[in-house]
Length: 260
Length: 143
Image 1 (cartoon, rainbow over the protein chains, first blue to last red):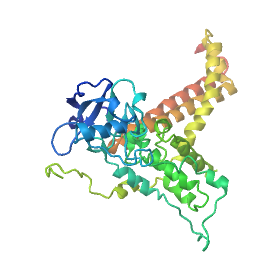
Image 2 (image 1 turned 180 degrees about the horizontal axis):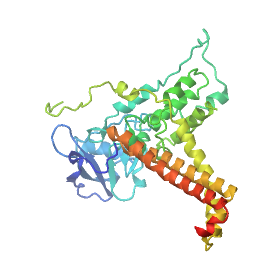
Image 3 (image 1 turned 60 degrees about the vertical axis):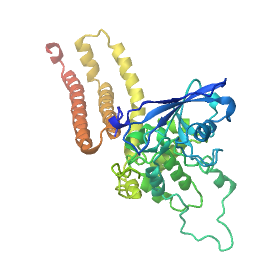
């Protein structure tokens, strides 16, 4: 449901300010969303003055520094710190991206960090992605083939068939795209969102998969697929440089093609 | 959870059940295609209409009536009116799907379609009236 105002218990208040240590010369402010399920308080934005000379170049370096040296209560997900696990997806300076791939120097002024938009918050920068994962599960993102593979070999693809999957297999399921999409904000309970639709097309386009028709059947729905209004935020925000909007467009083309 | 008074989990239903919902509606492509096809058809029709409005600027009532009675003009005018309102209800339905949820969704769509239908019908009747009135010679002057 579209909501133009935050519910009362979600309005963001002023938080604490963690001042930079004396002698710091290269200071940047990190304004970070904080909310804990353990008390009844509204979320706040805490300000951390960080000496950039003491940390690495990426936003994740700043977050790890804060957690290690400034405020150990700050909660966020991170794992690989090199853009392949998708854990540290968050909204940085107004754009969904991976903290580990976002250079601090690319951001003018203060660095505002919020959790991925319009998802339930578990704590601080940790969003609840269970619903998004279940949507991914619902499109059955695995090879479905009735033909048995050769007993002594793999299922083969030509170089061209394999190339069809480029730009899709690279998706790391960080859900930056889905949570940047207004259609997903308003209808996230039914619209599958760009990340899941990209995964769906990845299997429709796979030359080894024999269930493209079933997959298209499952997607032909006014909201599951067609709630995409080609807003293109997904492609704009993808930290891996992928193009979910193109994949959604291809699914719509195939839906039309099979009607003719 | 450390605060038992504020249960974190508010939905006990299976997440997969929620994601699958009631399954696919098995519609959507027709609406999506009709939106695009009608939009493309409206480009030349609207251009033609704008040109005609400029050509008829300052014309007298009988001249406009005579223009409206020509079969080609009547055909194009009817196409324009019908397609415009057809496209309008397709587009407004999308907005309702986006922003109106729950029990209000169905009545909102019906109300919108009813209003757009009546407006479109009014336009159609007006074009036909012009066409048919203009075809009976001699009565224009009286009108």
